[in-house]
Image (cartoon, rainbow, N blue to C red):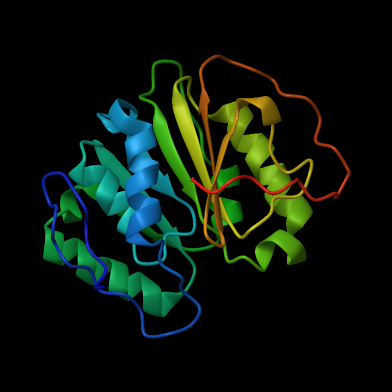
Length: 209
């Protein structure tokens, strides 16, 4: 099935995907489930996708009522695909596209009291969970501390998540879709979070959604 925006103002618009194996677009089934869970949280929020790929998550958020989006992608070829998708759906004036490193950009994010909530998508290449596990863990803890209240983090991974990866583990809703795990949490209050654990044990499998 061609990649598309599922619902909202631009529902049904087809999107281009890169012709390479470096980009793994989130399936329609998973994307629809994520946005059903987010519900009204999307309305008026800022969508930030740190591993944007095709840009589909950010564009879906805009179509469903997000005020603006920031799409970060390091692969230059894929950045051009994002820009063509923006032109196709006519969202150029509401999206900032950043060609660069997701970790570096995330560390530079600054928020002020009263800033609108953020819907932050993290769908790194699955190899990042092994190659850069500690870096990804530290990034998640940094974001959890610094994002505005009522923001949400949506993390996509393979079949398993290692113990210690998620800040405030009890706050996360974990769901399985075949070989994909979605972890979603809403920051409902300011919480400094506990220091990240050094353990690298595997979490038990979660039931499929």
